[in-house]
Length: 170
Image: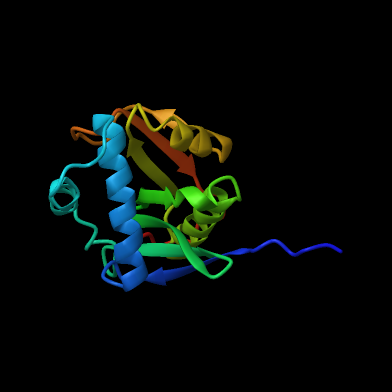
């Protein structure tokens, strides 16, 4: 007897949607803990969420996707619109769902939405310690580029050219 594996399903939500709030909080908790190499201290995650808010990941400035795996909220990814391109941010898959294709599903979904919006490329910046994320981006055709942004956590920059992008970028 073969058991069907859960599938990944993505949907666009507002950053204040309950599942989005949960996932963004877990994302930021992991970012804080990995950056400091210790458990998050009281108030640190809230401070990080305030320092780097996600409220612009909603129309007209961007979008936020949540991914469900077997019905569970399991990951998220956001896009910020720029002139002719989009910035990828907040890519996160909950630990219990890692290794099941969630990162690939999120990248495919954001790329599809970026193409539909008419952008010709996606860019992102990331930290040196996020080696799994950097490997994911390279596996999916993102190439390292010179710095396009500044920030205390921007240490590597990537870009992917999107083929078949519609005309008329946001």
